[in-house]
Length: 449
Image 1 (tube, helix red, strand yellow):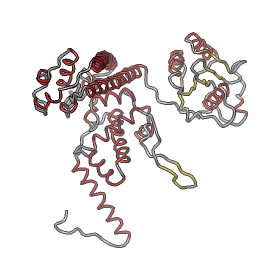
Image 2 (image 1 turned 180 degrees about the horizontal axis):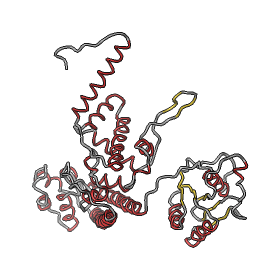
Image 3 (image 1 turned 30 degrees about the vertical axis):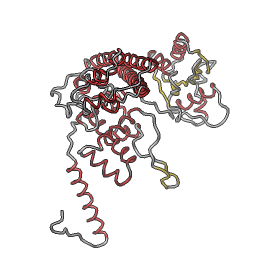
């Protein structure tokens, strides 16, 4: 076989049978090595039949690996069809495949991607297995339903405010038991404040007289209509959430059937309270059967967050060689911009990674707890600010998650007091070392701990 042009130019070729694809919404441009085909660059329409023809053409040429940019969502059908034909597909970040300045065409982009991939200069973005990808899609769809339902809660509250019904001031949550009873009664035609107030739960902090006063309103037909519409849409999304929960549960059961059941029983939960918008099945049990460890023992990670982390990262974290590679992928590790021996910046990169966002929220929550992670967060927040403390704490939670998933570590929280004691020992040890460098010794003061 003839050597590729890249070899003749002195660039080492790592993948001899590599192709590059420039993804578009209507068509895709495919480039292969010039010595494999008479027409090394071809264009295929985005229809499924054309994608199948493209995959067959690449297979007939002996192509083994294909690289493409993650352009919108247009890459998904191409990725799945090529993978189904046995090709190794590398989904590259557009930042890594950025072309040199000059004329930009679809053909040039495809050839540039093919050249970079042939030389092994493109890193594959993480893409989970088919089953985990399906679980991730179900969970993301569920989160969209929650967002849409939240918008209709705002519409209900706006309609109530238009009628001067101050329900949201006397109940903690208008979508709670008392709030929904009252709203449904209003939609059904009830206008009596005393009758509406009687529907509230006796555990409400506000008294019945206060609730009754808040339900004296200026009822207008257009606002009642808006409230009815918002309630109907809210109920519709709640029904869709139940269907999503059933699908997620079935997917978890299917995945766990391929795993060996853990020998140890599921540990007791740290909290027995049900979180808002929780899934309608026992998440902890199914996750424990799937991954073999209880992720909720890590402070800051509840059942729902544990499920989201597994859905986004998968069950096999060996794709990241170490926890440092994992935190770097999450952009929770410090940046590294050095020039002339001088550190220009160590800021973390901006990212749209959903896992990172979830871990940051967990870090804020755990910062209010009396745990080692909480003490770590509070000490850093006082010294370098809350924003950096959130990042550092999120990184610690990510490392705990990685070690638990990868090595089966059982996390035991040492407590805030243990962390403070270890911190004090480190500080004292450092002071002794610094004093010794200047020829001094330190002596403890009696009565001072």
